[in-house]
Image: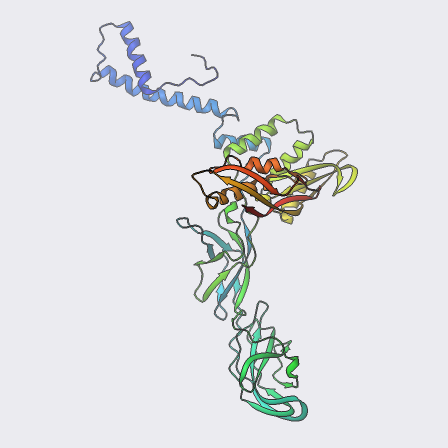
Length: 471
């Protein structure tokens, strides 16, 4: 039977019944009971035929990108030079705190806790590191210097070690020394271990109050100092938290995806760390993680590019730019040289996952790809954008079965997603905000109060969501 729009397929049972019917048509009194040898043989043969028909149907579907399986679609992409995007890994820097000299091998795992019931997000360090081996500072020895000076009272001193990351806790107190309009000599000032770059001297007067900064010794060698610093010239108080026994290390998410883009102070779990490490934290955000491209999203992008004659049109530039991992959207400005009008130039401004600003590596990858197409007589510039924060306030009327508090998170997410979807140089329409919110579960009506009018970004700007207030 010829195959038309849909592959012809029969189940094993239908094939068996058709064969039995054909047999009866030829031999009217043939026994076709389910316990007969004919039925058993036909059923076995029908199973093999079903497999052949199924294989033929899959093969037919895999002949065309419109219906190809994931594996076959990947082969189509390779044939046209359009690979599927596998996603990118969020990266950033974490700071470990721990005991003197603790070695932190590359591949040490830390994590960020998600909502209850979800596995933590895992991250892995990208280089070896060591906690600075500063040692514990000891007290200096003090003695009166009879030279006239600025010190009057009884004074005790303490020392701290400073690394490139922070400062130790202060040492034990020195012996007290009294002076009357004189100076005080400090000797046996301790020298710190490896990683110590500076030391600080603090003092306390008459046994009360905080230890205040006298001076910073900008080396790790000097062991003497003469104090003649007036009380009014003292600096900060001695630290109450040890920040010196810390080291910053670059880390990357174990799995690709936007979920691993986390805010500062989120990565705090010690998952697979060496003994001696007591804590970890990311002082800055982890960025540039993007989700792997779904099969259907890839199919759509591939079909568009196959159908496009690839003449270097605006659509082509957008398609090529967004084929790079870590690029979620692209805006093309013709006759534009990085914001300046110029014939023969075009500027492509790209945005990362969730509207994030891409890093320089991603920008360079797009630039290299577009340059490789060697579009005649056109100079292509690739850049990102300046973030323009937009606050939004909406007046929402919930329906009878929902409270304002219940609908607020969904409203905020919807408005944030709408703002992030607007390309570089795009416009925030009040109607777009209303459209994003109206129809959400529990929302009966919505009125935008801020902004008062549509907002238009310049050709170098992209809107990012600011504070979204729901009243």
